[in-house]
Image (cartoon, rainbow, N blue to C red; front, top):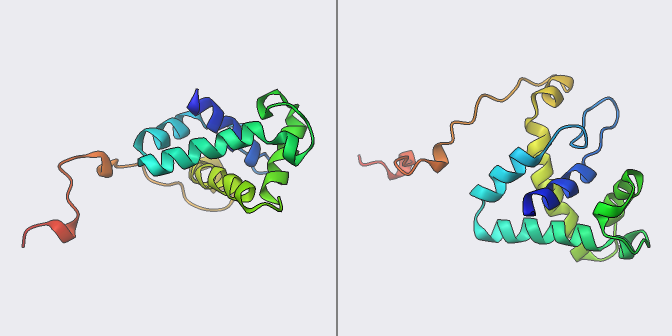
Length: 141
């Protein structure tokens, strides 16, 4: 449930434009699932809370009394833009949290990186998840 909600918000925040694929074309769910699984509790609360705000605030941003998942695609993108430009700081910051997670997903996509003339990232070593991994600073001398 949380993964789907965050994924919808992320996809609305990163639509395809200017010849670049957005997260509305790609499926951000695997990335979002990994982020929510590995995130510290404060980031998890912030990300899920921002996505919940995204779902509930179309009435405040575009005047439609529907949750974001029930909006037509064009209105959902308009709602995402309106949240990013809203006069209330907390509304803008909710969209900033969504864009932070979405930007990590979008920027790591090999197709997007190729379109921007950047090399693809190497495979994630997942070393931060390995309990035996110790940073060099903590290694015995």
